[in-house]
Length: 205
Image 1 (cartoon, rainbow, N blue to C red):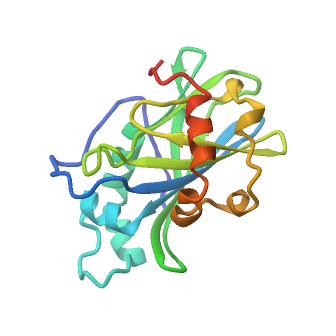
Image 2 (cartoon, helix red, strand yellow; image 1 turned 90 degrees about the vertical axis):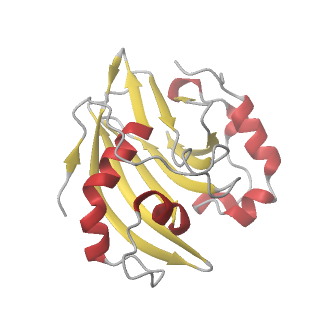
């Protein structure tokens, strides 16, 4: 699959949209490595078709061909919404792969991104403000993997992750959330979400 690299130009490719629903969730796994940061986004099917109209035959499945046809527009959209800032510069976002996945009663567009140019222990601020066009209250529930531990963080339009500011109270204790958070388990662990959101500044750097 063709890899896309975002060249530090902020492009918003999605057209003007009407708020379709509120309080939706997407999910991500952020992996902090020595020389790169991995960002796997699990974007719900409903949000995907609202933003990109990718399901051309409306069979509630995104085929490889449908994803490839919309992939460039998807890339430009997410490159404007998912950012990493390090030492005064924006890291390059590389889109490695995109695929459709069905898990129990949920369907996702799964995209593997990489932030290139990172060198540990540089401090990095990560922002993820997806789907605000259709849901201003959208939350991205993230598992942060760093130094052999896993932490929970909630990305919204008013929060960002300070990678070097991760605190012990953000560490995931609930075993249901260690593999991948889901909407149903998240609703039963709101104390973890509130604690992770309160652990960082809510202002944008």
